[in-house]
Image (cartoon, rainbow, N blue to C red; front, top):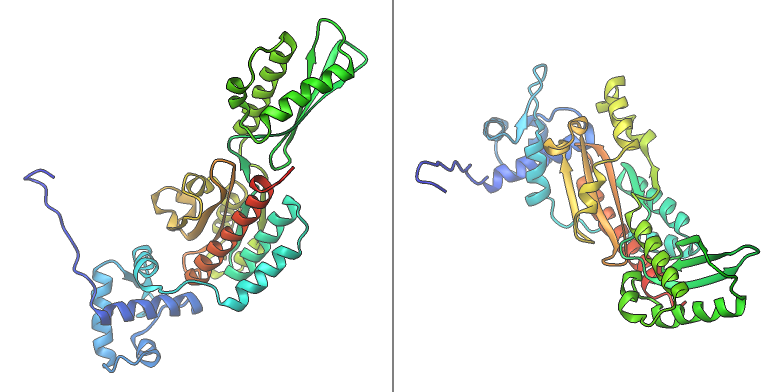
Length: 351
């Protein structure tokens, strides 16, 4: 900071102002109507007059935490007000134990199939957070070899089939100068499987030495397939809950609804979660200057999975007056469950 720079800091809110702001946010989330000082007086045990509450509300408005529609004397939270609520007032955001048990039971009842996990996660997020939900399938970060097969064909080509940890399958034909017997191919495949099991494909370069010309071709194709798998864009995005969110008064306008649907169908904002550490929950309010089309929305996002193996993203999207406590608690818990499931499939898989 230079000598000419001036830092302007806002005064910290008093406990009473914090209480009033929290009550206004909660009331507006529940009713979608501007909140009056009289309502705050009835809701609270502040022990002060309605006039005193109005003065405090005016102060909060001057500080940028509240605003009011021209047609109403009541106040509504601003994005700054929601941010303060989320960071300093929200308190414990864990889901009740009974809900966590129910969600865990639903996951354990599902078959060990990725598509079922994704669909179930989206449905649970949408229902529990009362928001629209998105879940991406986990993407292999550094594909590791699970099993390799080399299959003889009628022509001078060999079919290479590789299975990476997590079940991703890739195949490629390799041209050969002379036919190779299936027995010889099986010996080469056994060599790769013995040395390379659970290793990143690129690590095989240092593990496999004194290779024949054909074995070097196999290694090159294997590395190429692993690179392609690593470079794939986001896998399928599973969605749920949009219809219910569109019924919120914020999206009664066709233009606003269309904007939300477009963002939901092309969720570029998930990149924010993908670039964060696994398990980190992020709250994005009003697009926060990055996504103009989401100025009327908030998002709660998280990345799940196992670092270095496979990770995906999940989150919920709704109006800025979304129930943040439930949204954060649900996203965090489902992300933790998904990380455990990915660990079972990609890391603990004995195959």
